[in-house]
Image 1 (tube, helix red, strand yellow):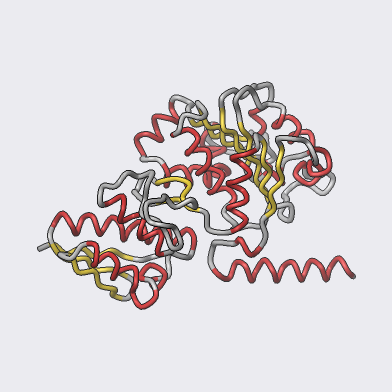
Image 2: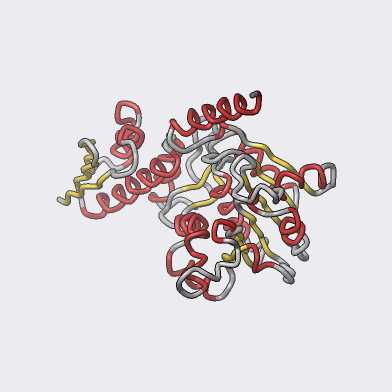
Length: 329
């Protein structure tokens, strides 16, 4: 008999447990020899060694999902159980409303920890559908809508399915004046703080050893936007994140880097630019420049697509009302 306690530190316990501990009951039903108990901000898993290990991994992944998105669906539990039970990862147990024998169409990718990255909102679904049909997609929306995470998941999926040979993740480092020269440390130490969200997403989706190997071999490259000049990116899935901080000329430079058999996904929030007032955001101007060109798509997300803490949506709405009032004055 083994007993494990799993802490819930950055997530709401009720989200992990499910309504009336429904998620934990589902785990117990799948593993009759295991007892899963909610205890405040932790979960106790007790039973035989092997089954406790399997259930503990699932619970930890549920905590990760809850921490990242603020919600856990029954289909998340179903998919994790399917993988733990040794089913083919590309054919997880169907979520609610999905007929038996069919895979969940909202699942984008299976993570290194055995979990899944899935579409959470209508806006994310439009983003995924657009990326499947177009070579250049702009995903524009407020903070917390999962733009970056969804984009990275699509890139990793394309790499795993060998639709591309490499991933290139790019961010403007405008907060540091882009040149980065005055910051202490070597180049990696200087740019890492600005690229950290991209590393965080990758670390959830690719096991550590493989990620490090891919980074070493430049199969996955993460770099500031300024370092893209003069390059041609062939057979690549290229992401420009925080694109509202790219100037008009930088946006043109980035888009013209796209080479043969490549895709580009550009994400940003036009309400949160850090550019000096004299510089227009390339993400704002690009909508008028490229509108109507075949193969290019603009997908817009809004506060209804926010998947962070439930208060984030209210905060965004409050700021929109405040800014509207300031404009009216």
